[in-house]
Length: 423
Image 1 (spheres, rainbow, N blue to C red):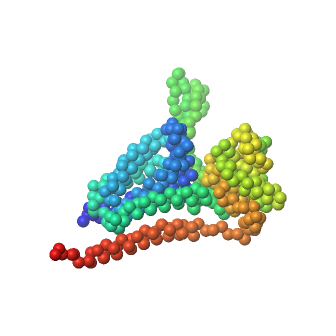
Image 2 (cartoon, rainbow, N blue to C red):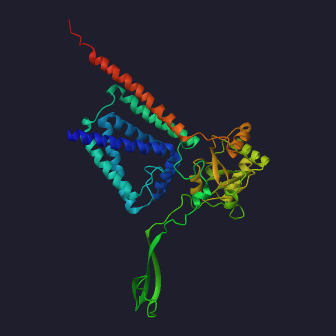
Image 3 (cartoon, rainbow, N blue to C red):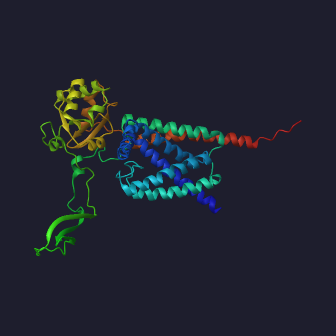
């Protein structure tokens, strides 16, 4: 009985963690691809960089499917074995990340829940222990479906997650875990409150005397002893201070002038075409981009292209696309954080993000004026994330529920049928 309770607890724990991890990765597949880039570059696997998005999709679907199958008791033996193998690989990997720190955070929960590498390792220790117990006692796990429905639950979960991730890739994440959400005011997010805690450091000083170096603190260094020669100063962070949600958001024009305030204080409306790397930006929707620029030019709205590309790459993009809009320079990481599309468009007013479009979502020419003016005049309300979340949740759970009803009553009917006797 005790083993049964522990096994079920481990089943629920593993299932929830894997489902959550797979879901947040599927919500932001581009963010997952960026994290894979960090890993591949840290480990010298540059040859795999072209496949980062594929890996992001596959990992999200794998974790989601394993979590669903574990939670529902589907293919108990095989799923528990796969999860054990998964954790046996990830646990030593995260130990190495915690010690060597080649990547600042593992990205296991995306931007939804950022944890340190050591926290990730300890989390994996718990999951590894749970997966070992579940693998040994997999026959104790409760089964929601009969064996005949296993294939549907597994295949449907994987396909659904792939489609869900692709929808978020094409139409921007259904939930934005980063600070640049629609409705966010960038200047306010950059502010540091007066009462915010300051970073605390411990300072030490290295002096030399008679060829021997010694380290002193701020309280006992030989300030008035000329026989000691100052060599170096060290500082160690002991308590981090407050960091604003947005930092480093700076825009420079082609003359290397900082125009950040000019853009963020624009009270009429400004379009930002964001392309972190023009050399890898999609050119499949240039007509819509040019229509948007023509509209902005005609009605007196500002329009800038923000990029981290070099002047040579900007010139090549202009030659190939006929772009006439001004180009400005911003940090590549910032641009990737603002919008998960290359290129994508952001509409600002007084520094507040009113709308975002991936290059797949750009409005048609005849719809630009009423749509943009609706956002600027606050007569168009962006669809709430909650509605899209509920729609996707129902799209996933209802088919599984219908299959469960069919599976349950078919099995019940079979149990109630009298056994046929041989003549």
